[in-house]
Length: 375
Image 1 (cartoon, rainbow, N blue to C red):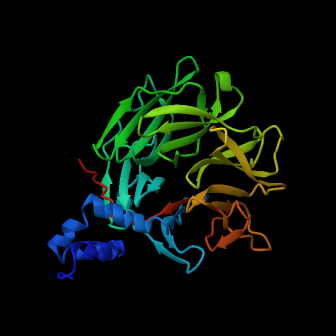
Image 2 (cartoon, rainbow, N blue to C red):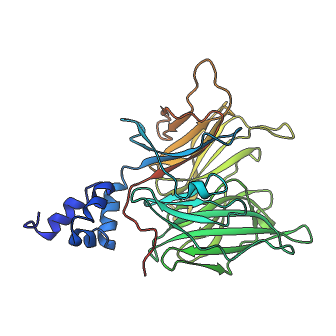
Image 3 (cartoon, rainbow, N blue to C red):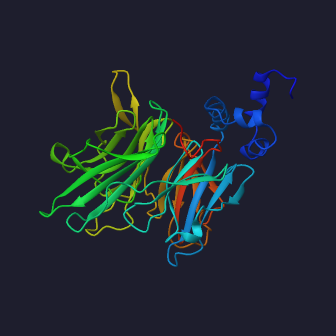
């Protein structure tokens, strides 16, 4: 290959899997340097991105055991699963939680509480880095109430960012938030002054990446009172905005998603309701540009008599919804994990058991992205 033009060598190498490229680093100093450049890492990522795998985190909901993180390649065709070795697992106080998966980098929350300890991990290269501890902590005078997280890529600054929104319970029964951001490029946390005061974030969901922003479901306050909204954080400008939702039922759950690069929500039945009010349908809405130059919510799917045991988790390949089945197995061997296409409403079942298990699912692309950032 030494006689081939450099561009040809680069093109050939950019088509190879990460495992092969990692081996080549020890064979040739020139190749080691080439495959570490930002241009090559970006070119390799572009080739990997159209064909993502499925990253599954699972543990038994009753015992807390039988846990692990699996990588599923070709989920709908030549299904293959690989159990991943989680970094630092033996020394961790609990099974780590996945905050997000972006460009081959996986952010793990490894803290026992308050989301205060994180690891950045590249399963392809097996690199990992324990991040510095956050700046915002719980104190006796200001105890932390809830913490909300999001991990994504800031294309404006070419930076991966971990956002930590900390909610405190005030002495007067009110709550207030503080926000800090970890920068992959700089390798440090910083607290930002930007706030949002017209909504309360809903627990249990991490931020969803959509076109350079992180997005959380929330309950509106003040002029958005009694409405469900999305709180959106622009990672480039580091500012928040509130996005009102369409007129969805107040008796349904809202799951924020990304769909074809657009902000989307799934509205689905509550598993239980204290006041006995239920909705029994599934709705899928997408916020898209319209002819008037404004963004409007479009209702793509409505499914009546939707089972309360089916829960949307997110999207795979940014166009198929991942839906898990919760509850007891039935005589018909109800599929545990489904891929649902909102366009033709077709479904595909995957041989992943999530009955009696807590489950997270993410798209994952193999990459050479470094966990150490760059200046």
